[in-house]
Image (tube, rainbow, N blue to C red; front, side):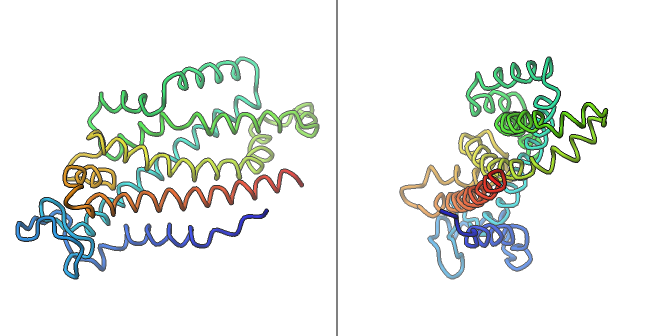
Length: 268
């Protein structure tokens, strides 16, 4: 059954991106302003999503935190996907010693659970947006690279690639002209999964107190701040958690659609 074009998921994702990056132009409340008179106020007309335990406007903080979460998610996914593409294509095309080394490195990384490897790396550095992007990228490229390697290996065994090799066409020309166009669908599917995975990873680290440090904020750190008052102020954790869920759900739906389109092209 052909899946429908994910109009709703794309609309939700675009809406959240626009809210995060254009929201401050229209919503002028400071995410850092403390107000002891409205501590843990529930959602109301003055504070649409309520306030936190320091009297800060939650909507303003979610808008500001969304910028950090989305930058970390997209930045990590771009780097991890490019690393995976580079290593995967090289292993599948050149084979031999490079392929064996690639398999050994990936197996070594996969020996450790990804999140624990992430925790180990973050514990040795002071977390910031850039550091988190780099660390999450280092721990997130293996899945993409294995998919790319498998497909590259299949492409490399095609007769026309062997003919090009015999004709001494340069490796770079073969890879860029014949491999990359065929690998684009897999790359984008991996990228969309990578964005959601990076956002969840950052949220998990922030929830454990190892993510972005104040005064910076992300959806994960806002969610973490609300865990101590969850029983009396549900909104502090609910709304940042809802944003994480909506972004992740939308990206998964988009990934499923892209994967279906990719499978259709392969079957033709």
